[in-house]
Image 1 (tube, one colour):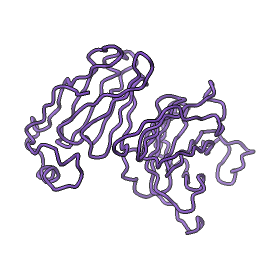
Image 2: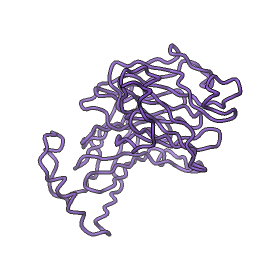
Image 3: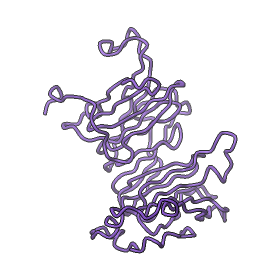
Image 4: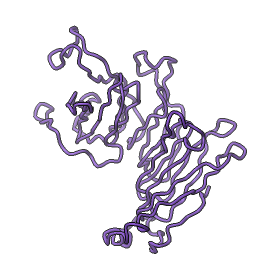
Length: 312
């Protein structure tokens, strides 16, 4: 189908977990929403539509493809998109009267331009910034790390200035990536996976991982974001996990042994303690037959939700 025949409208957000994100640039906040093969950019102060990005055109794909993941690096404003085996980086700028796209943008408006196109060996499923110069890319068969070679991230990038510095295979497709507030660790999760994989660098700067095991498959993960005045090691390395049993578990680093962080489950938030029984739908979802091997071994007793220690 020709691109000219495609109607770009405001549609429903894609169902992927990284389909939308909030980012900051020049003291303004923007909401990036992937809908179908497009990405909508909203300015949150007035909730105005700033721009509609067409990644499939920038990647020169023959057919429109759904955008599964978008991530904005704050406060640089650089946006990373995963699209098939391509990673696109969009840089923000203020348009001028000499802009080549003056027909669509007025001088002084903000726009994002595709500057870097990274070709990967695998189909990307999610992207997440670890720092201003480090990008994590999850794919069907593993997770990779890309770094910017220039010391100044404000310098306009070229394809040769980004390089893949690390990669590791995963047993299941990467579904979620979450980076810690101190940027030293990150967690990965597969779809319907009961094991959250926590990545860290040991004393010899070799990247290793440990497992945080759950009784049911994990639906979402998030690191605690501390206040600027409370950025201690204990608060910046606390991880929240949401399980299919409806419980939120808080994991915290207890100590470090020979460069290996020791994590333990410090608290379990069980909504059934004050909201009553979980809906029948949850029981049906957990008891329904499935071909997924990770769900086949899940315990069927909803009351057994405590799992006091992390296993590695």
